[in-house]
Length: 322
Image (tube, rainbow, N blue to C red):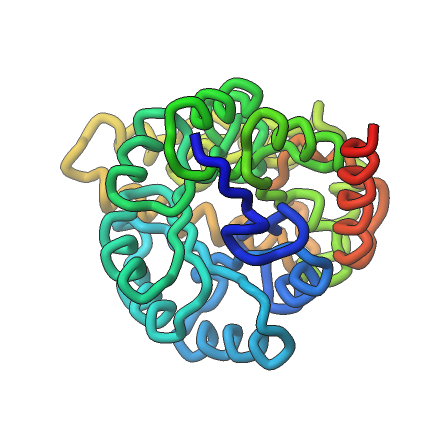
């Protein structure tokens, strides 16, 4: 069990990370989160070119010297991963979050130059593997997470990882209030990673319809889809999602049957699904596929990100006092 807190690990005031969200996270959100005392990360895949990725880092550093990071999909479904890693190492970002694959290459390249590596994990076995590889922390992705989620609730996963791991555990999934943050800190987490509620921030670049959906829908409208990325993904159960269904389609079934085709089919499924999600995120379309988690229950309006952070901070302080 590690006693290092996220605030100490990164030198921040609030143990809250604005989670890296595909298509959603941008430099404006990062700057706002850092100004509010927390930290934030962006998926490197949100930038189509190396030049755009470099420009995003430059934009953030022009406005703040506080710590921020990037998320890398570290498997063969992301052919841009090696170049993205080289760029982020060259620019010496503060930390990298790895997802959906082995972090070994990332750790080997980052550790010698002082870049911290946090690894998404959904089980104790995988957490122990990345700890052995040299990860600086694990992010416990619970079943309550928006987007790609794990099979186990954070109420079970976080205490288990805290008990058996010797590196810090960051909790992720379903978090929308200060009282929830305190509950997870009491369970031994060093901090939290929060995503869904920040989609409804003024700084998020997605459509008004997407943001309003987070206000209008509730946790009972969140479903798990196996059709969009090759991995289970939580989305809002819009009429279009109901129409296309959430069960695995032909390509997904082929991927499971033919191991030798898995790499190529997974890449095809991911690209096809992400195009659907991107279209729905930024334009008016009846094909509404909006990624979100059950913490939509905490979204009552669209607000500046700093106010969402302030509300969580106030709730955390209130729980500490009580």
